[in-house]
Length: 94
Image 1 (cartoon, rainbow, N blue to C red):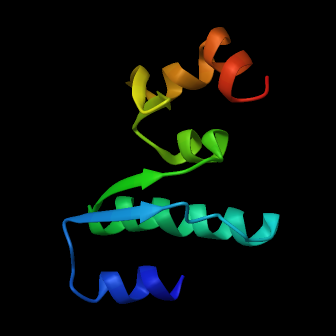
Image 2 (image 1 turned 60 degrees about the horizontal axis):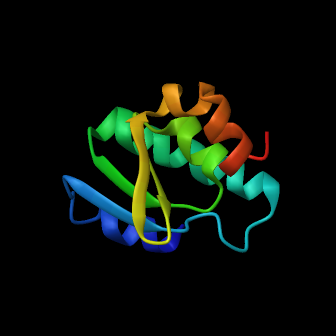
């Protein structure tokens, strides 16, 4: 969270985050994603995030891209990716 705070000091239009939930407890993961969503909503900052926790990421995203072996295999609005049965089975554990 310190890295995010430091980045926000420059008032960026784009914030790039690599695995913001890595190594965090489930409670902290929830808080980090709430903060990321607030940054987007309140500051209007675009967030580009790479995240293994696809369900959480898509839960706060407007748009999502699914990569497999370095290639985009699906791209759509996040809500559509979350609702897609093939995506659920292959990537979301569902």
